[in-house]
Image (tube, rainbow, N blue to C red; front, side, top):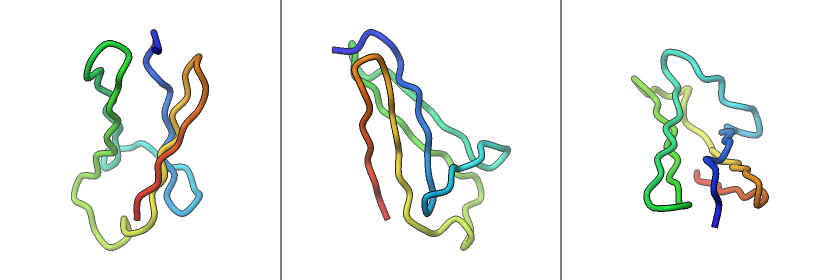
Length: 68
């Protein structure tokens, strides 16, 4: 079980998503050592369409998840 919040990066089509006024990330601790990560897109439009991949890292290692 992890004791620290993961560092996360979102990729869209293999390019890092730039966090700005339209794109944000929320990391919530759901229970001890278990986290959920959400990519928030405000006013999503056609330019936001594509394949997204989450990469999360902590002291235990790295994992990823992809959605299209």
